[in-house]
Image (cartoon, rainbow, N blue to C red; front, side, top):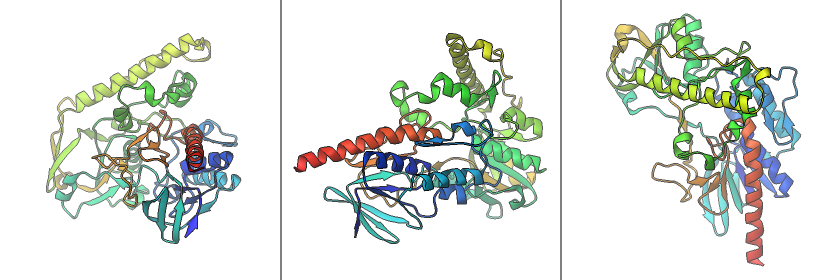
Length: 416
């Protein structure tokens, strides 16, 4: 059995940021990665995807984007190169092709069983990602077997999709981008819309992420929100990284010819039922977007930045059909493929520790898991609004590595 003080499970950007900070703390550790560094970017992304965050926001502890296009958006190969380059630069102790099979408590530490042997450690960092298992609704089992079903994790490009109509279920970043790409390829596309976060790519002449970064909104902490569980469940905003900084949303998709329908509620063979609340859902998304833009306007005025920016303006409300469609026979409509862009949840099947709530979610407070010596990285709004981004991993890793080091020091003092 091999031994180390800390095991980090996952060698994506979050795990690597933690590795860099543990090295600074003098804590010996190893990262266990089931594939290669940045594995999910190598195996689970569609071809045309770009980061939602501008290049200047690609920042990790001791490492940042150094190219000549700070306002651009990294492609999938560029993102892999950025993360893999970081691992090399910090000389991260990564054990690749090492799948974690089981983690259990072992005295004052943890026993970790892997596909390449067993480990023992004093502390554990779960950085295996929050997008492991697609959230496929139960009614999917009622759909005809000859209609092809894919998750957004399986989608690669329009050539992969057979001729015929496509229903994309889910209006967040993945759903609207996939619907946009398929429609550009000439496909008949229907988008099923539930709760979503509408957001312009640019506002007042600046990228929306620049405004949120400069105003401090991305640094909002879990202590500053009324209901942290609610904000952690919010879908990703309707944003797209592109060379033209295009704003994507339900209005632009409808202009392309995409039909929008309400949230898919159930299925009876090829017959789908949709919610009639589409107008209300879109109205609420418009309201929240306008509230965000007014908050940014207030910051611009209070910070004396008005002269640097364009004037404030209103965005057009979301257009919705006057009479909402409540059902659709997929075969009559010619739909041959359904793409589930309905989010994901983590895979913790290997984590045999009493650290889960009744919903199977990891119990933690800002990444400090409800078990001494266990930490998490890379979860939504984990410590700050930006926690899920590459840019947010650094602050979280610095805080949590400090907490981990103090935990080890306290344990050592108790044993002395």
